[in-house]
Image (cartoon, rainbow, N blue to C red; front, side, top):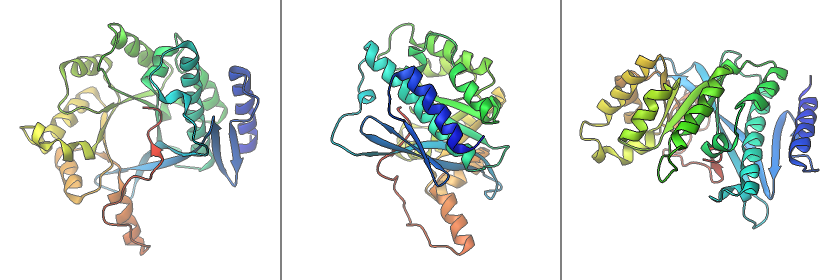
Length: 298
């Protein structure tokens, strides 16, 4: 099935589910883009590399690029939990993952590579049952396997209702039962008791860490950044999982990852070095994240 055929099939499905007459997905020159309300969306697939062999790519992290074409708010950006907003959130989350998956397939990436897709925790809570069923069918049509897809969510536990952790854990268990790998982003340092309890309960396959958080939080970690990274690495090794250290910008951070035994890494430093070895144009010394690029809906 051609890419255009896939895009048309996805648009038909979304039209039936959302009632939106306009096509949300578009394909041109082998790439897929999307439009949601007044926002144009595109995919960026950042390679995950091996610490000991940076030339090898083991996966890709999908990130969302956005351009607001009109000065109008995006409906899903607020914190409202009304029925209408909940439906929009679910539709937006599915649209983004579909967009990334289609671009991954169209790009003919390594068939053994993992694709990391973000899932908003609110999406998980607003889908009452059969988590992952909607997307699993699409994955199968594209010739992928759910085992190659990592569904990653954020561990944000502040000011949540009492059943929040139970429902979130139940949703992640549903995804895992369909073959998906489970990833979590740790956004707090050091890990709180609530996060640690939930972490041990779900035993994720991948723990995603932002290297920039460690640079800002070194004073909050009395044992030192290197020791804390080593602790998290040993913890994930006990689960049979892996730590993914992202957004590595400095050589010192790369050295910490190697010393801690972290195998999977991602960041502009690695891509800059690859371009230098190829004799390409050098990247700026301290690259900043592109404006309008963010992790999907979290």
